Length: 452
Image 1 (cartoon, rainbow, N blue to C red):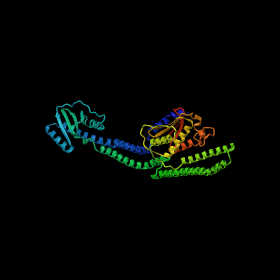
Image 2: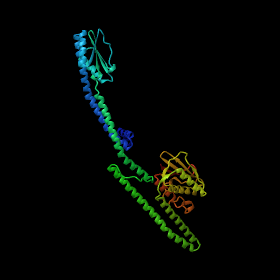
Image 3: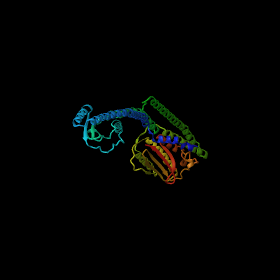
Image 4: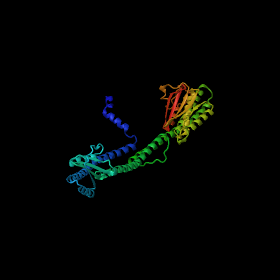
């Protein structure tokens, strides 16, 4: 049933409309404005041509054909040179027509092309109704003249009339006025709609920047009432999220600092108890607790208030690799040759996330490689190793706080379980994504994708 519903004509029509409608709010607003405007102009034009144009052309053609019929009757009554001169003089003075009579001539058998000229069709129809003699109407003459030839019993009467007798400029003025007014209205609507869309676009940019961990200092609610309400709601939401993050960070920092004092006292008391198996086990537990407290503090620092700054990602990765190699640990680095624009990052946080990933890789592998690739809208950082990797069913759990892939309590192989959690939070604070894959080196690949 679902397949039949998806293939129904109504569903296909809606799908076609979705594909061809504008995707942006500005484009859809323009479509909402232009559609009734175009329909109004089309209906007005149709009504004008159907009523005014048809009526006007019919009357002009009927008037000119009636004058031709009158001249034909006068010439038929008396075709002497004196009468022809008198008829021509009256036609010029009263009707603005030029009359010429060719005695003994025969009208050429030719037809007029009326396919694209409704005015000519109406003129021919009026001539047939009023003149009732063989005739030819020629509009393709020089000096904007209409040549009308009528066959009489003993010759051909030719009448020249100016095209204004048949064509009116009001039609073109009307069309130009409609087009001009439509363009003016469109330009005004374009300006107003841009001003209305700009606050929505700024709100979208501010929301995206907040999701990427960046700051928009000059953002303020503006625009229509609904847009201002949405902007104010966004500002309140941003303030609440920041307050909650700060409260959690302060709580973690406070708890971790408070735990240091009793742990220090426990270490001193254990050092005074001597050296036996029970004391050594307790000392190992205390050291394990200290590492967990340091992990809490590192987690809190990852949630800190470091500001995003314009950063060259290639330089950042190069400095990080130099620092790691300075410590004596081998690290391969491959950077894309494609030029990359500077991006807004928290450099210390990114280095901390990379340090956690590289540290985890070194516990289990001999070779660690960092690769940088870029696309149009994001850059990707790959951390590859040749270790044993992580089973696919466990890759979703390793990002949980204090989850240790090594079931043993050995800190050299299992860590504290916060490294990947801190790295994930740092990447998410930049609006990015982090995931685990199989590495080309045979071990584990950590993929970091941060939008530009």
